[in-house]
Structure formats: structure tokens, C-alpha cells
Image 1 (tube, helix red, strand yellow):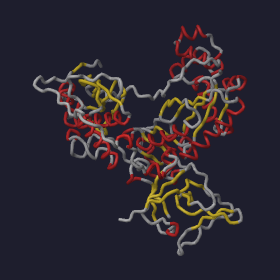
Image 2 (cartoon, chains in turn yellow, orange):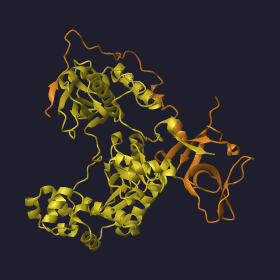
Image 3 (tube, rainbow over the protein chains, first blue to last red):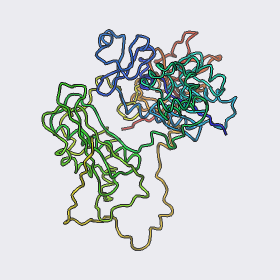
Image 4 (tube, rainbow over the protein chains, first blue to last red):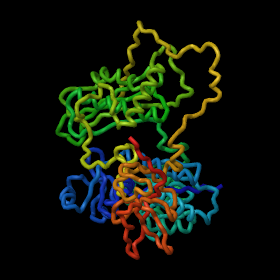
Length: 425
Length: 140
């Protein structure tokens, strides 16, 4: 049976999430900033029209913000994460096979549906996601992932498509590829794009017709696979359970200001450990291996640079944060060096496993039932009263200086009772 | 960055303490009849992915049983019908009104003697954000 794949992705996802709950932002030049309010990472069409590029640092548009021409928001990941899972669960209604590719896009398997019904099905998906969540999306449908991506590109690029493009027909594939710059093809980055251009390959169609052996030799097997996919040959397989299926959980942050003391790093890392283990418990998973790292700001090359990491082990797979917190002080004694300005730190849980099937250490007293219960009470309290209401003393009592800059954070409309939308009656 | 390995120091003087009780005697006769406890989510929320909460501010819908400070449960997946209480986007603001069709034309009604129906221009379309399905009213 021929594969049919739809790639659905949300338009300016972060901006759209903000607009769903704050209608005053609709039709405005709105941008959402990266962690620490650094650069613009999501833009509405109106902001793009002002010529503001992706990645523009916030300070460069401050004049326009003050004049009210541009609105900026800090990134609100609690909101975006919740809206993302709503988006994905609506898509699941259309197919049992779904691959969550990122926070705002997913591949949906539409194999087996009559060919002449695909476009209508795409419109249905778009309409239902919008009705249920308020998020506008684009849908690209074709026979390989790379072609589905290309169809999605066309759905966004050409408004006349209404945001849905069925690209299962080879004649239409050819026609679109002839007018698509090679740099827009999925898997062709800016660097490879430049090299292809230099070799005389400017369009997707030219890449599709390139000699596979030559591509493999000059570039890589990966790019050869892209060529096959453009020719309609299905090569990039489904990642069951989604590519976002967690093999590791990482909590890391760039600090709002340079951190120079061990105490501050300790507080930050302790809170990352708590967050990571909380996520782990939510996924009902366990881990016995973790990595801690701290590093300076590589862009400040006038300052001394360092970056160190350390692997930690637990006696048996656990989701109990105290197992890692106990190891934090000795670990920082190894990692920390005086005289550096630290910019970023992180904690990652590796090699996750689910509850069943792991062999506990007979002699280890790691997670007693009592500890497991304490952790679930901790999670329940923090869910109810806000993240980090109850936290180990190692996270610290003082106002957390290492925290992110979030000058323009919207309320957590969907995850905190105190933040739900207020409506006039 | 090459990770170095630290292993927690096993303390030879500490022996593991197993907290789970050793089971003796008969199991509870009620064990076979245990059911899940009642869930308000199950009662009040039909489409979790499309359900949102809002806090009501104002008095114009008291006749519909919505009071200032109440929590509204809104289901976006439902298509609004004549007589539904809806959350609607009007002049850039989210407001709650009852949707009423008169001569095939939609009107937005308040439910309080002091508040007249919302005046709509003849061409003005109603943008429905979602249908209000439940009200949570606090008594103390």
C-alpha cells in the first residue's frame, strides 16, 4: 500500500497561543522572545511585514515597542506545552499513527484513505484544530515525509491554497519543485544549500533529478535519502511513539546575569534536578544515570572560558529527586572553578526506562515506598499552588537571582487556576 | 566535555530497610468491589483537548445562573446552537452572552433586567470563542 503522510504545523505557534487568550494581540505585529528575553523566535505575519527577521535581538526593536508598533512577549512554555498537547490530541482523532516531530508539528499517517478524499481530509484537520484549540495550522500531504514537508511549505507560501496542499500527484510535485528554491527542501540546511547552489543546483526539481551516486559521494547518505524522497521513494521511516519520545530529559537555562558563585549554581542546578525528576515522574519513568554541566558564555571571548560536565549514577533506576540532590554538592566541588562567569548550567536524565522490567538493586535502599509517596505529594502541591511552591532547601529561599529574565510573560491561562482568562459578563 | 563518573559512596553500616508490609491473613472482602472514586473531570468535561476555564466578571448573566467570580467551563469543540450561552469575541474583547436567533438573525442577550441585548450592526458577524457548558459557583 502506498504511504500517505500529512505534515501539520501551527502557524507562528507561540504567537498564536498568545493570541488565543488575549484577543487584543490579534492582527498585531507580535513577537515572542527566546529564554531570557534575548531574541525574537516567533513572529506574526504583521511583524514579518515590518521587516523584523527571525532571531532579531529584542533591544534592536525597543524603539518600536515603546511607540506601540511592536508587541513583545516572553516565552511562556507552560502555555505552549499545554496547547501543543491539545493540538496533537486533535490530530490523533484523524489517525492512530502520529509522529510528534516538534512542539508545533506532527506527521500524521493517512495511508489507505481514497486519494480523492485527501484534500478534504486535510481541510477537516485544519478546521477542527482551529475550532478546538484556536490555533491556525497548515497541512501538506504527500507520499514521503520530505514531499509532505514541501507540500506544507507551499500551503504556507501560497495563500490561495487555503493552507492545505495535496501533493500526492507526481505532476503537481514536479510543478512545485521547479519553483521551489533548493534551500527550502527539508534536510537541506543553509550550508548544504550554498554548496548545492555552487554546484549549479538551485531548485528542488534540480536536486530531485541529481545523480544519487554523485550526491552520496559529494555530500552524504542523508542527502541521498532526501533525493530519493523527492523522487517519491519512501525512505525516512516513522518514529513510532514520536521522535519527541523522550530518551532523555534535559533541564538547562541560560542565566539572566553571569553567575560566579558556587551557591548560586547549586541553587539553579537543584531546581533543574527537581524539574527534571518531576517530568520523569509525570511520564511514569525512571532513570539511573544523569549528567550535570556548567559553562561560561562562548560569545564573551574576552573572558576566560570553561565548560565541564559530570556523569552521576544512582544505585538503581529512580525518579526520586533526593537521590540526585545528595550528589549535587560533591559533584559541584569537582565541577566548579573560581574566577569564571558562568552563563549556563543544566541537568539531564539519561537512558530512561519505564516502571516495568528494570531490575532493582537488591541491596540498595534507594527509593522506599515512603519516598515515592513524598514525591507524589510534592508534585500534587506544586501542581496546585504553582511550580516550586514546595522545594528542597537546596534550591534556596532567596529571590532566585539566576532566574530567567521574563519581562513580558503572559499568564499561564491553561495550567494555573489563578491565571485562567477573565471574561466580561 | 568528557563525563567523569562519580558513584555514590555505599555506606557499609547502613542496611536497607524494607517498608512494604509482609502480607498475612485474608485479603479484604471489599477488594473485588473497589471502583475508581468519582471524578469531576469525568462529569463536567467531555472534550478535554477543547476545554478551557474562565473567571466571570460582571452581573449581566445572573438570570442564567452566572455570578461575578464564578468559574466557567468552555467547550470549544461544540457548534453553538440557538439558546446556548457562549463566549464571544466582540470588539476585541471576550464576553459571555446568550445566543438567540430572531428571524434567522443572531442576537446576543444578557440575562439581567439592567442590561439590554448587545446592539449588533446589521453586517456584524459573531465570532464564537466557545460554548459555556458548566458554571462553578462558590457558596463559601
